Length: 489
Image (cartoon, rainbow, N blue to C red; front, side):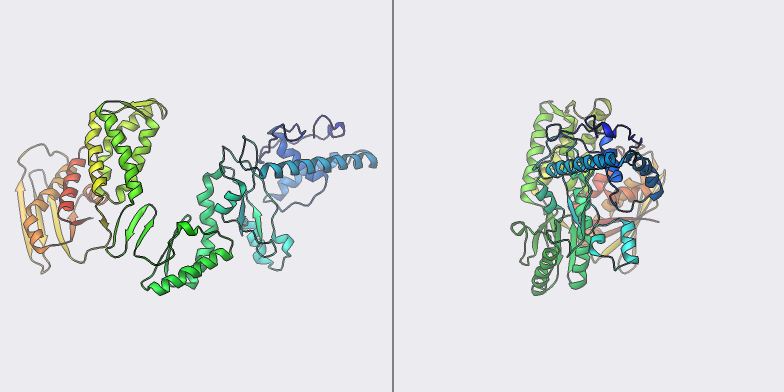
């Protein structure tokens, strides 16, 4: 493998970089393996020793690749071959022992070291097809070989913790086939792998239970109208998860049936059908916003990356506040300008133009008004249209009676068609306000011929020129508890 073995110098290394490489730490064993050659060395060792390997995806390519090392290893007298084979075996055992010792460490002390992460019941598509065609394979063939991949970056979790996070199954391999699957991108793919592992278990739980089950990574929400059935099926689902080797955090779980639950960072009230931010998260975001307000008032500097972090925190709450996107435009504009010109790690000076948006967010989070997520039963239809000379609107009552309203433009500031259509929607709501209050509608179906108006009202977004008009319409609907749904005609 290195210069200490002169008998292997004639064995040339094929040029290929299609393998994941293993690098030695230097202080763990006496192996001079470079990052590029280590993967090829292991392949050639296995080829020279004629060790059976699993079927690869491209058989012809790898058979051609391994043909020359096998021929090189067979040159010489039988004594030389025995000596080479012995050195190859000892070197291979040393490499495997080093990889296992590196995988058992509590942390990754540097780049190039390894750890093994276990996933249950995951096979390649080709292997799954092979098992489907021949279900009578022995258990030794059902288990795939261990694969060790490089994990980049520093990792705070031990191997056991990562195994628990990914659904570690400590049962014998004879009960449930499993194999090691590498994670070349570190723990950044943990949620994706976790979701893949739990899908089959949740599918089995849905077959056995009549409750509705919602899953997001490692959070499971179970809904049912009957408390006794809900409690019984909750314990049944827990048994299913534990049977497949999953570990349940009892101290973080809500086992008993309740109508108020925290899920995905939100507090859900099933009695009133509302949602709002949890108290700890709201306090944390308010603390960051008040600090940002102080910096903006004094025109101080903040790192661009920290500003983007605060913007991400407040954007997460836009599910509760529909107008939230309209009140982050100044901060986003400032952040995007600095990132494009100077990068993420530079310092950004906050100006007073961001104070109104920060103040709006502080007031909204301080009140924490719950959002009702039920659809109203009563709807009133309003159809609007706008021209360069004026605007018109029609309100249709439940008894099919119609009320009309129209007027001419008093100023020439409304120039674009998008501004005219949005202004027509605003004036129609103001004109029919008394009619809407008397009938106490909860839903307004707004019909418009402009697709931009429909999109902006439904999404709560808008360009710089149309955003103030969108905010006025949504503010009016928020004041009278109206739910506006715009449609294109």
